[in-house]
Image (tube, rainbow, N blue to C red; front, side):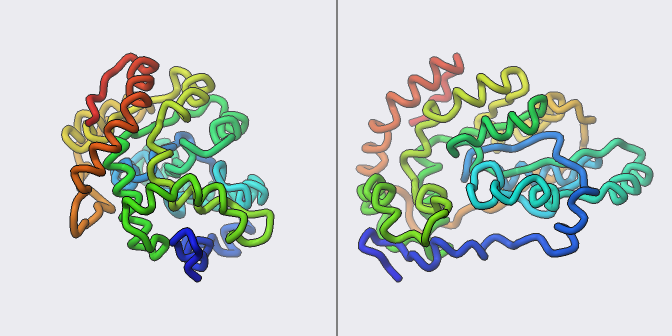
Length: 290
């Protein structure tokens, strides 16, 4: 059903879009390993590509799927750590893998929705206080438009980019009119909030405060311009061996029929300007986003 705020409620709240773990994985959860590092954001910042790069590394065992949606999703978080552990490799598999590769392998959780989700940083730190976290930050204008295009691709979004931006706050305020009965997870925020989620300064402080030197922030544009260099820095950060055999393709790249209208882009430049300036001051780096 298309609600008055211009999105498809049936598609938006379809939790089956994300493949579930099977009975075997859940029943053997206690025998599974946990992630040693996290790729926590941002959505549409290049995290799919980064996860693919790590999956090629001989010291890394890929999880059952990217996007576990645990620390950011109220419904999944309520299922507990047993449900969470079912997304990772069995200890027997890891033992065999280690022996065959001659390494001590690790695994990771690559869920970019963690970054801007309320309480996600605190929850993750509670369970993994000494873990390392990688955060990709992309030009928020390009991130917003890519997020919009993805929503259209999955059938959530039915309005133009400009109409969706104008309705963003109203959609969030009105969500309980159209969402399933409580308790529910805010898919309006996760799947339809394009502009607000690019104000990175509003989300980054708890990550920097809790994880300190265990947080690595990488500009997405740098990763794709110099993937070998940036990925090498990440391997050093994670204490993983260097690897010369990574194929640095761009995965999950959006195919747009048209770009952002110049007037819309300029509006977003002005919107993000104060947020970006605060971010640059906080991180002591200027990303030069326009």
